[in-house]
Amino acid sequence: MTDRLRAGATLTIDLAAIVANWRLLRQRSAPAECAAVVKADAYGLGMAEVAPALADAGCRIFFVATLDEGIALRCRLQTHGDEVVAGGTPPLPPPAIFVLNGAPRGCETELLQYGLMPVLNSLSDIATWGTLAAMLGATLPAALHVDTGMSRLGLPSEEVERLADEPERLDGTGVVLVMSHLACADEPAHALNRQQLEAFSAARARLPSAPGSLAASSGIFLGADWACEMVRPGAALYGVAPTPGTDNPMQPAISLAARIVQVRKIDSGTTVGYGATHQTRAPAIIATAAVGYADGYLRSLGNRSAGYIGDIRVPLVGRVSMDLITFDVTDVPPELVHPDAEIELIGANLNGDAVAAAAGTIGYEILTSLGPALRASTRRPTRDRHCGGDARPATDR
Ligand SMILES: *Cc1c(COP(=O)(O)O)cnc(C)c1O
Image (cartoon, rainbow, N blue to C red; front, side):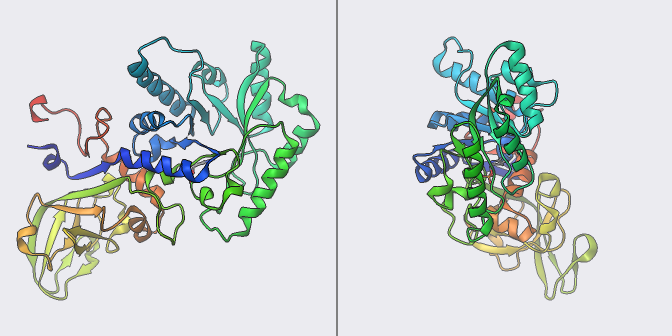
């Protein structure tokens, strides 16, 4: 039995598309440096595969959210590097890795151990980093994050002022990057975009001189003013449209297909699924496919999305169950609808952003829902990934 038949649903991740997307974003932002955000396991798609592919393509700077993600990334790139060079390892090897949330209290030395740099988000973060530096008699590299309108992470303007007035607070901290984050970059006409750029420039003028970074995926498309010296795309690498409402310049990075497990004819007036939320108005053929909300196929898609068999659209009818969904396939030639035939749920006919819109969410959440649930082995990067565990006889592979 092949893996594909064994799995209920198949999530295919296109590493080459992710690399092509990074190259396109780099080209668009040049001469700014193009980093890559690989937090949350590369938006669910597998940091262990995505990061080495980007590093091979020339990406020198990565951002993760947490210390443990940073450690995993450093170890992965180190191993990967060893495969390539098979030599000794330098003490602070490139690529640079920034940890957006900094280190949990008391774990700051682990950042150093793994050659990671914290993003310092407050005067207190800066003081902790400075104390460690003093203890070690060293200057320790870090990024400074200033809040310019997001009210989430970063030094508020009064803390930037304090820092400007009392520069000794930065003793021991080697500021290698000053960054901020845009709240509304996916709405190019939003007034906050220009206001944040101005607030960022004002803050930078009060802080030690260092490369600046403001734009994530959507910010890259606001214009050259926002690119500064470094851009930090995440979602666009993974194919999510950075400019909603216009043509998506990015290549899709995922596709999702589900296997039909049963086909049935039902009469007019019959209900389908939990809650009997769909009722046929004519005799119909229903195909049941093996994917559900336990696989990250969001329950809010019930009665709201569709699949494709070939290029024929089949509406998803009834609620999404834990492991199953149902489609009205009445209009599909019968020879195409049978157990083990596949229904495309995300692909050439229906992209992740469209599915997200149907679910009332954004493409980001489609990735982080499906990826962790449906990705299995991380050993073979270009292979299709399947639902299901690894505890099967070797002869079955
Ligand atoms: C997640 C994140 C990014 C990447 O954002 P995308 O919209 O996915 O490109 C960049 N910077 C910060 C601070 C982030 O939290």
